[in-house]
Image (cartoon, rainbow, N blue to C red; front, side, top):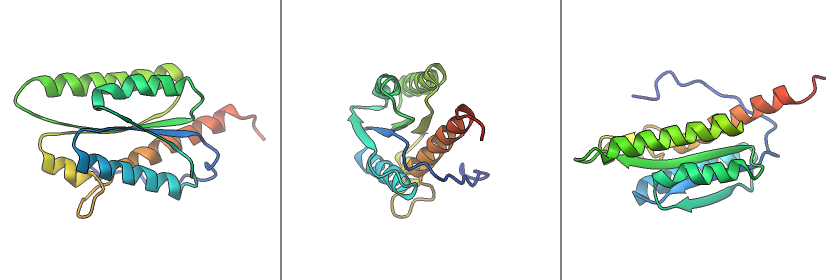
Length: 161
């Protein structure tokens, strides 16, 4: 299972962070699970008014993340799913989205939680979507990672007390 060895993240005092979740629309059942997991994680962290935006597909995630990073968000979470087909399209989309989201984060200093599933089959995506019967909840994990990183960045930018 790919989640083996994941860290236990403890995140506190982050209710004031501005967080945006951007979610693709392809593969509705998987995406609904990822979004539900992300919103549940935000609620658990005390972030009760996140921004939720939907985009057509995973390819569109980086451009929206870039704009939001410039509008004062402390963390952004990108959710999507790309399932391998019979053409090289899978590789191009996965590589472009991954590089695009990485570029946004590194260039802007705003953490981008990577909740984009890149799976060989729909069954693999469903196993990671956080829906009933899933073994993993990647929407929840992506939020936790992004917010934990934002909290770390905030701790090093505030004056030492």
